[in-house]
Length: 426
Image 1: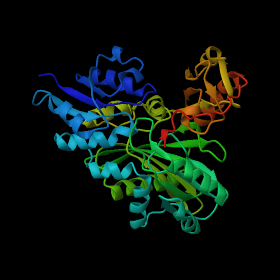
Image 2 (image 1 turned 90 degrees about the vertical axis):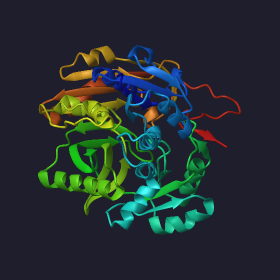
Image 3 (image 1 turned 180 degrees about the horizontal axis):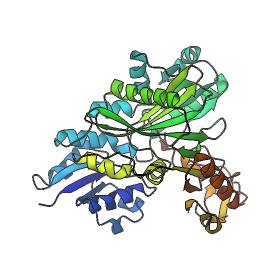
C-alpha cells in the first residue's frame, strides 16, 4: 500500500521543497496541502501530490486527509511555523504521531509561554501582555524601560523592536495591534508582548524530543543587529562554550520543554546568557530557521529535517553525530534604503576555501531598507571548517567580497512603503 506523508503548507525559503524530496527518499509519497501552490518555487519538481485546500480551516484539512484510503496516511508535518498548530490538530484527529494540540497552540503564543514559565519559576525577563492601549502604562510600570515590544504570534523577527521611551512603546504597540491577519491570511492575535531588555549574549539550543524525552542536538551562537531591531546576522555552530555554560543552557531548554509539555519533534530555544545565568527568550515548536539545520549537517552530519520526517511517521530518530567540525552562516544586509540593482562578488566568494555556499535572495528591482526583520536580508554565505575562529574569518572575508548596488528611491506622492511580510492592517 502507498504510504503518504502529508505536509500542511511549507516555508518558502527552500527547506520546504527539500522536505518533500526527502520524503520520497524515505519511501513515502509526499502529499502537499496548500491554498496557493504558486507561492512555492520548484513544487512541481518534488513529485508531491498537491491538494488544493483551505489550510487555514481545520475542518477542510481533516476532510482532505480523511479522504485518503484507510491506513495510507503515515503522518503529517510542516516546515512552516504558521501551520504547526494545524498539523497537531490533524494528527490528533487522525491518531497520527504528534504533539497535543493545546501544547502547540501554547508554544505558538509567546505570551502563554511566558505565563507558563513564570508559573514554574523559570528565569526569564519581566513581561506583560497588552491587548489595548489603556493597558500600556500599567504594563510598563512592571516591565520597565528600555523594553522589547513584539507580537505574541509572529516569527522571523517580524515587528520586534527595542523601545527606549514610553512614546516609542505606544507607537510600536499601536502598529502591532493594528495587524489583523498575518502573511498567510490567518487572524493575528492583536496582542503585544512587552519584555525587559536583557543586554547579554544570545544562543539557541537546538532540541529534539521523542516520547517526552528531550535531546540536545547542539547550541548555536547567535549575532543580531544593533538596536532598535533584532535581525539575526550570523550563526556559529557549535557555539564555543565551556562545559558548565553548555550544561546550564541545555538544562534551561529541557526544563522549558517539560513545563510546556512538548513530547515530539524539533524545537528551537533562544536563550540569553546574563550575569545571573540563562534566561529564556523564545521557544519555537519547529526546526530552527536561518540555515541552522544546514550548519548542524555540515558540522556534525546530523540531518535534522530527515529526523523530523522520521518522527512524524513514528520511525526511530537518530541524532548521533557522524563527524566533528564547525559551520557558520552570515547574512547579507542592505546598507541603506534604495532599489536593488544587483549583488556582486557572489561567484568569487563561493570559490573561497571552506565556503560551502553563497546564496543571493535579493532580486533586482526590489525595494530594500536597513534590515528590520529576516525578510529584509539579501543573501547568505555558509562556511564550514575545523574550528569556529576559522569559520568566522572565512565568513568575514566572503562577506567583504560581496557588494550591494542600489539606486535611490523615487518618493511616491501620498503613499507609504508597505512591509510585504507585516500582514494586513485594518
